[in-house]
Image (tube, rainbow, N blue to C red; front, top):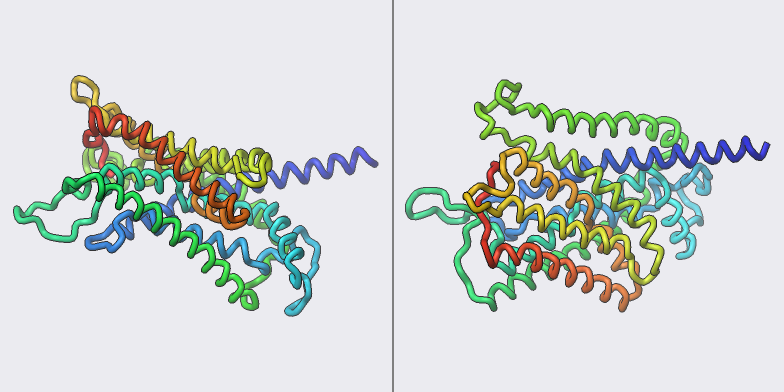
Length: 389
């Protein structure tokens, strides 16, 4: 009897882990696509904020703020109906609300939404990259005025400026990003409270017996589909969306490789946080490690894309290798690192610990990129990339 119960519990734990991994895979892909989409949509002529990574980070943090405060979607928790139809006293104290937050954070769908989607929608490594670009005067700017010659200027070209202005740009990117993301976290929480009486309740039986099982096939099917499309892209010569030559093939660099690498980064972040965040309550070590490591990987990938060999060939080599590096930056690093969870952790820590954690993360991330990207940018310099983005 004991052995049978043990097998049932073990099978349930394995099923829960499989469902969690499946949600993370699917929502990592969706979050990455959302990040890229928002980035493209917000980089337009005359944009009032030129670093378009900002709005993806704000959007993901807003959604996480809603999920963290929501008390209705997962009211049934693990199948225990604790609540009445409309009015109840289940959340009449802070301790009960905190307990619900802890319980719902173990539900596979919630993990997929909060860690998978929001974590991949936001990117700490891209935030740090824009911070370094502001410091080095390499931040791409949307075109706002016609060129006297009639040709469209390069959005990556910038006007020389002094070090003081570069420092002001650095401070602007850091403060604007942190301030707006923190505001988005609070606004998301307020939206959750406002919509509490109108949102539906996700029933445990529906999740466990239907949706969780379906997602296993959908998630792995989407990931395998992305891998197949990376091998045989639709816009290859002779493909259904062919634009002519291989030089005009852009799908892999713009989105497909990012979808291939995103689940890997998301899963590493999830398990790193799961095993390392509890080591020190005042400093989430897991999130810190993946944010800094992902930032370092992004810096190295960017250098490889833009550094030339002695004979003038790009280190990225072919178009495909350049696209793979872009996929690593957008997909792997974008999903490995997160602003939304980082902001939520800062908000949940004691004030002094939050300041220490936040400043240490930004300081370490910027220092890594100064060492990795700055050592190349201010010595041999960067060259144009081989692939079209």
